[in-house]
Image (cartoon, rainbow, N blue to C red; front, side, top):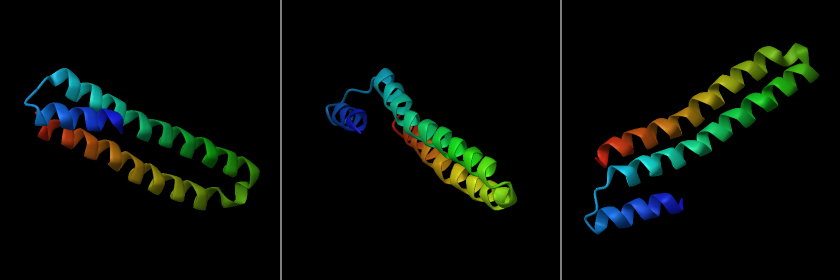
Length: 83
């Protein structure tokens, strides 16, 4: 979050350094990456514990991945809008 604030302050000051924008997107992509890793790990653990519920867990996992990935894509779009 602090990188986003840093980029906004830099843009307000007229600094259009692409390095700051790239750093901001890179830091913003860490969250969805961690989220997807945690989501898949917990889903595999749930499928191992209850194999009969694997279909429902897999469907829910893919929905969660789509929502988390949407956050990364929104950050990617904001990255290009800031250019």
